[in-house]
Length: 96
Image (cartoon, rainbow, N blue to C red; front, side):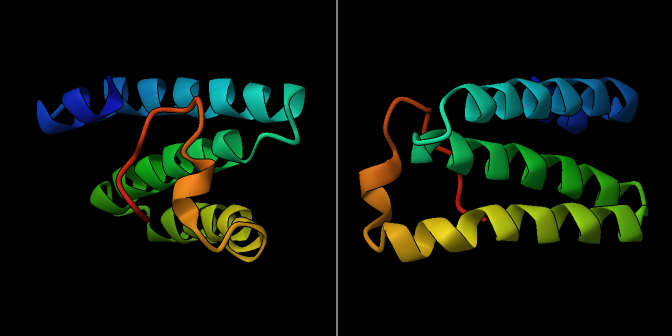
């Protein structure tokens, strides 16, 4: 939903949708810490929110979020060199 609002030029609505997505993904990670697909999904949600920050010229916030997303993905790259093995139950997302 956030991507749609972003493309429609509704940054406030997009921000709320992206924040909700991050919160849901974080809850999934907290409830299922052994499931790498949820960590990957969380990183993607954070990446989406960072892109909105960038579009809104909030560069420091965007950088912080991107660093957070990278910090989530780096251990996954080490644990699962074949990224396709962690696509699991979470929907496929564009790569960061």
